Length: 115
Image (tube, rainbow, N blue to C red; front, top):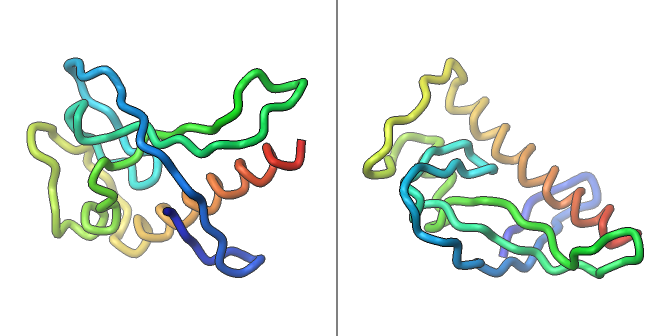
């Protein structure tokens, strides 16, 4: 589950981990922007209603497989095997970005459900 406080109060999503092919390279969490080896970020799927205009019945996004975005943003945890991009944001700004990205994902799902 992914829950965040929004303008409408607490809102949450039920997500499923989709097994992605394990190949080389890195993947980036779309919530906290942490780079991981391919196994460290998983495709999370949120089931939505399939519509006539939409051929898909879900929304997907890559997220930290261990769901430890907050730990990565605060620097209390680092992924093995990848070098992170240098950022000039403060920890507080990174935390705000995480919340903004979670809210954006919730909004995307809401819009899809209203189609």
